[in-house]
Length: 87
Image 1 (cartoon, helix red, strand yellow):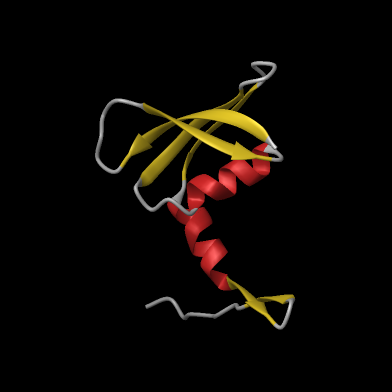
Image 2: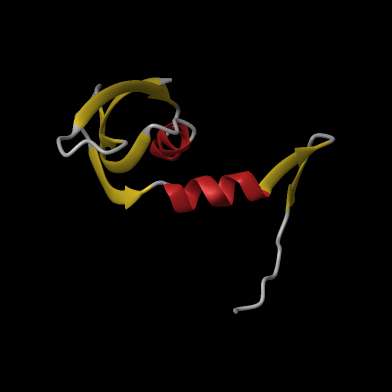
């Protein structure tokens, strides 16, 4: 497991913040940030051990919505989809 520093915008802040997190991959770090509701935008991820940087620059709410659709059930993963008519 590696240490990562992520640059994010929290809620309605207009200045970025840096958070320390841990993970086995950048994808795991992204998922960690998605689970923190106060994080609005993920700017980039920096792995501490080698300073490798991944630029992300995305709002996280769409990823939260997608994550909520994925339900764990009996050790498996089930994707719940719903169709909606345009009004």
